[in-house]
Image (cartoon, rainbow, N blue to C red; front, side):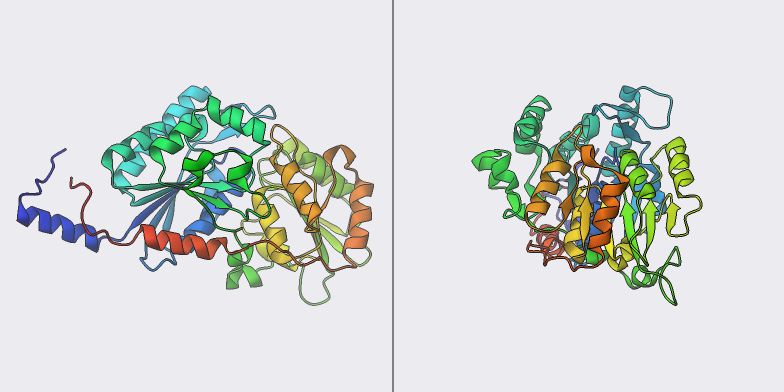
Length: 417
């Protein structure tokens, strides 16, 4: 690659003009090994970043084929990688391809590296995993460090796992070293009054100084005019009954909750809507559909690209306790029931317990899950109002402001190539 010598005023001026005229570019990476949460979060962040005043072009790097079913905001495109699947013990394998996990990692790492090299982003935001799934970001992070032109941010959800487990894992994976070497900032999409992430996980003074708590991401931002009016299941309007909604993201680990909901009695005068997710096995979806057969008060579907409009209009919400789900419950202030995943991570259990302590949601431990337990809760939930949510929901506006600062034109080139 040929460098333009800074002593050549004509070439220097032309290169500087070209850089200033080009719109800023942002990459958002998520590994997407389980469910849709990481992708949905990055889509919402992309929407916020597009509003920062610099009209940046945004490339999402997503790790599952379902990404193609989502409508992208203007100025946003998506690179979809062949997918990993995450087993119950936390190990990874190829979701659909008949190749080993090492071969799949090499394929994904090379694809990411090539995309970032050619897109030449000014800002890259990595979701949750500092070195990427199976360390697939390592070549890209090294290249970005050599180029010196891209700001790199780690975006963390509020809770990762139990502190002792998280620290042991991050030490083993050398994530703390990666943060020291490659990351300019750490954005925590949470409220320290709810969960003080940096303190709980012992990030230390130097890394903690890079942390900004953005606040939670208000899911009402997903309520575009189309989403507000959309009724994909035709369950509102006219003489339609009010409904309760159960959703489990991708669905791979939601079989028990879906089975219990499909067998639960619905509150009088209400219907139930159950979204099982496309990552649930066909056999499990078939068994759940069989449970719903003959019930006029229950509708079961595999997938809705944007269910937020349904969530906002529901009389009550039932789900697991992933980050996005929790944000929906905080944002809409509806009666909510969570049945957290407790293996292989304790993330959802910790979040569910704190939500219950604050009156945001009621928790049922999966060991106590049954159709009767869900039915009993639903019966009381539809007759009451949820308590006001007292958490910071200003995350999206803060992300917009921080992106604006990071993408502001620089006074000089760090490198000309």
